[in-house]
Length: 68
Image (cartoon, rainbow, N blue to C red; front, side, top):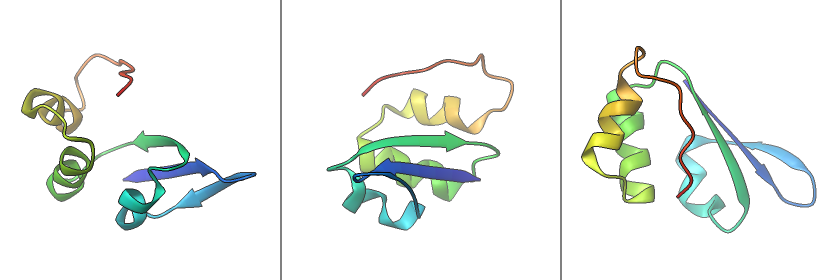
């Protein structure tokens, strides 16, 4: 499950499908139990390295914050 929060004069919740259109805003993406399809969408949208996408898929990865 992915929650997308963005700021457009106030905090708003967006849909994952709309993420490419929300990139002009400041965004926060909260990821829990991500599916392969969701991971691929994030990878494509943000040009993520394949190892970063793999890290998203596995729950037992160490918690980390990465700025892109």
